[in-house]
Length: 419
Image (tube, rainbow, N blue to C red; front, side, top):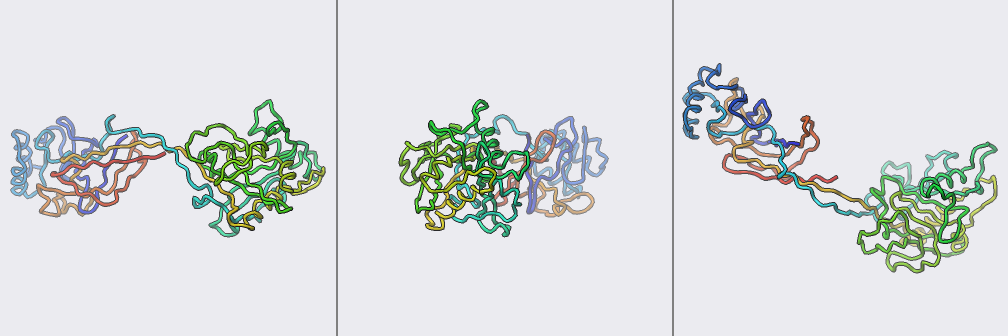
């Protein structure tokens, strides 16, 4: 990988060698606008500047000598490789091992819902779903779905292993509840397990909350979510997981945890009753329909070949709790591992002191526009381009302000790349 320093303002990488790197004694390059040389500079076709080039290659040239030669020839100086280090004219610099440092992996947690909010208190079903889709699940938004700024947050589904609580409309296909149960069973359970089992109790039917993939990043943050349900008889159930990671230790790496009663503020209330399981990597919470009926009077209907819309019952329990008390919203956070790499971009005193900006020069011979730049060019570095070995631009690092570059200073820029 290589870096390319882009200069703006009054200057930037001017006089770039055709090889794209430092000038060499046997290679060609370009310095000073349109003046060029290749191999031995004495073979230059610019007769008016041959004396300057010959003088430079046969003796140790000072900056004053170059300025004098330029004034006498009334042209921008041609500096052969190996003479005075008037500027390398680089357009890029390849990174070395010392320039690239692998950083640590950081665990980043943030509010899960749109806008990085940690709590969702407004719940809307979508009118964009067809009636067929609504037989399987409800898509829940953070506001009116007809408003473009509102987004889908999670979905709610009901599944029954035998297909009860839904209708197959007289077809030979699986009923919606059976299809949903089978789908989540295949995704979440081992191949030799066909039924959900919470604690020691096999579950004939379940409610499933699936958080939108765009919300969870790497995974749902264990120990940092809380769902509040309101029952039809006035009950309030607060559910969390038993990972015990409420202090953000980041040591909860299991594939699943039990869902138990409790709150983020007070911790686990009891682990004796297991309401379901949460699968952080999938962002899926599976709840026992039987327990929600007995503890929260959800009223699940299990009649065969009946479109009971049971998933709407869980939606009502979630939205009803938040409507009754704004403190009863759905709280959750996402978790993401961010890897950082640091690139140290070095512009030495003899590098990147010119600009390719047409306003930097004047005339067909490429004379410097600013006479004060003769012998003392200046440039302003504004950004750093990151290229691969095929000269393809991968990233651009923008500086907060332009940095003045000249022969009298060197610049070190630290670029942090997170992915």
